[in-house]
Structure formats: structure tokens, C-alpha cells
Length: 169
Image 1 (tube, rainbow, N blue to C red):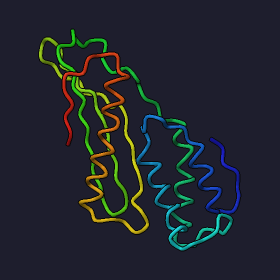
Image 2 (image 1 turned 90 degrees about the vertical axis):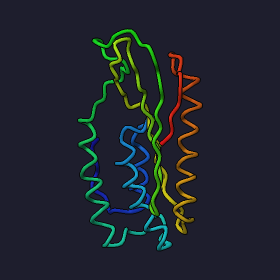
Image 3 (image 1 turned 60 degrees about the horizontal axis):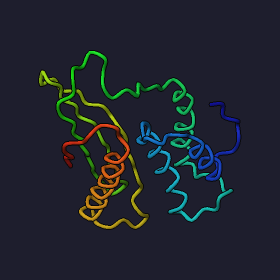
């Protein structure tokens, strides 16, 4: 991705961040850092075309400079390796967590073959920012747990393997 040299404004950072296509959340931690950078001008009540404050400017420029490295990012989308035996058990494991800054969840497919070998594959993740005036951390933890339930329902419907059990952490 080529970036043009323009003044660092909220509108530009949002435009660049929104242009990153990541439906399964492989780079959601990377995008969350941009969302955190974008939240600071909101906290300061800056307008869309105001230049980002100097203290945020360094973080924004660092994020924009690291964006071209995402072109090198690749993922193998096969959930079952070729050498893996006949599948005996399929589970989905969901992990969620929260902080005062944000919350998120990640889902893994756990396969067990007839020889009791285990293989885990990343399936998807989601991240969200906490509100500008965040609720308590326990409330955010509950929100993160809720964020993990939604992918479970969707994955059970969309994956073409019968899911024996879902485990939430």
C-alpha cells in the first residue's frame, strides 16, 4: 500500500485505517492501535480536518509507516494440515479479555484426530475500543465475553464440520 505525503489529520488516518480489509481479524491488534490513536483527537474534541496534536502525531506517523509491512503478511487458511489424520473431535475455543482501553475476542478451531493428536487453527478475532468514558473493567469484561458469543453462533452455522463443543475463556 502506497501512502501519499499529506498532513496527518483525523480524516486521513481514518481513511487509511478503513481501507485495510481484514474481515477475519488477522491483524485486529494492529488496527486497534490505530483506533486508539484516533480516539485521542475525539477526546480533545478536534474537528476532522484539524491536524493531530504533536503528542499523538508520533504514534500516528509510526503506525502509518508500519502499514506497508502489512503487504508482506500472509496466512494459510487451511484449518486441517495435510498430515493430520481422520478428525475425531472438533471444538471451538474462544478467548476474550478487556482493559480500560479496549476489549476483544479471538476464536480457534481445535481438531483432535483418531490418534489423539491435536491441531489448533486461528479462525477469527474482533477488537473494540472502550468508550471515551469507559464503564468499569468488570463491565468491559462482560462485554468482551459477549463479543466471543457472537462468533460462536456464526462459526457453528458457517463451518462445514460438526462442532462438538464450544469452550469460552
